[in-house]
Length: 228
Image (cartoon, rainbow, N blue to C red; front, top):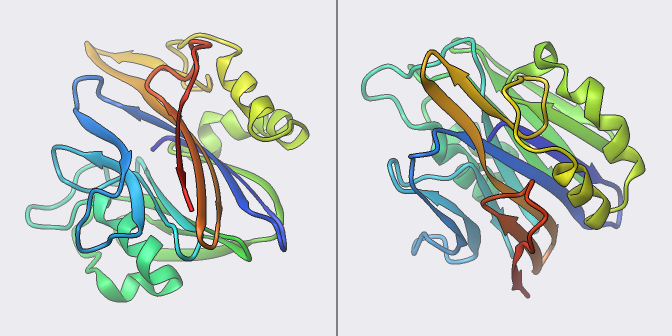
């Protein structure tokens, strides 16, 4: 996951945009209840590691998302995959750190969005730092403040209605080879990272509304999934 926008407020469903930037050839499955041991958790499934970048627990309305961070790009041998983190966050909430060993993991930012709370945890490869965010519209990216996406795009998302206005912002420009772009296709010495998936999520306890697309910039209809 490389760009996340969250809007939350008391007595309102959580509303989320999640854009995943990844190697285009890395296969994944679209959102569903893929984990038999977690029957009320819905998310896309990475076919390589079996985890996810975004997961929602339908019964509680909690959504957890993980973004890579550049401080420590590669995990040590035997360390857990970052793909387990959204599953742990969706199920255990703020208590997720008690259920995984962080030693050796690659750096990340974990976003936990509930109807009554928005919290993030940043791991730089050594230290885990938590933060709480008041009600409003927030944007976080894999590159952090350095990629300037939040400076450029957050005002537009703050003013736009969900979901149609947010979708129009994603569809405004095609993918560009520019780390400041919202939708990207970045070529770094022949290695391509691109926006491969987009999701619009509205979650409340017992109810999930999800729209998703493998070409979120293209102006084509997004697929819909509704639970509850």
